[in-house]
Amino acid sequence: MRQVRPYVASLEEGVLRVLYEGPATPSECAAGLLHHAYATEIAPDEIEALLADLTARGCITCAVHGISQRYTLTATGSERLASLVEVA
Image (cartoon, rainbow, N blue to C red; front, side, top):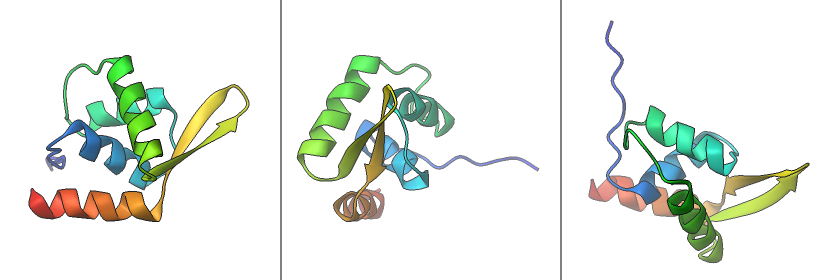
């Protein structure tokens, strides 16, 4: 049986999809994006900038666990993901 991966239209949608599955660090977000077939390579600075933007917009929250930051989707982020998926 062949596994079908969901199509991800943007980096923002991809990150929100990863965080919908559960809290993640920036590197886990990048790995998740590769899993969702967004790209073959992701620049860490792009991820960091997007995570900062999503945090500022209230779509995600950040908690520090030990030395790593883990991001979590908020209700606003869930709504944003739903609107991005509806458009696609």
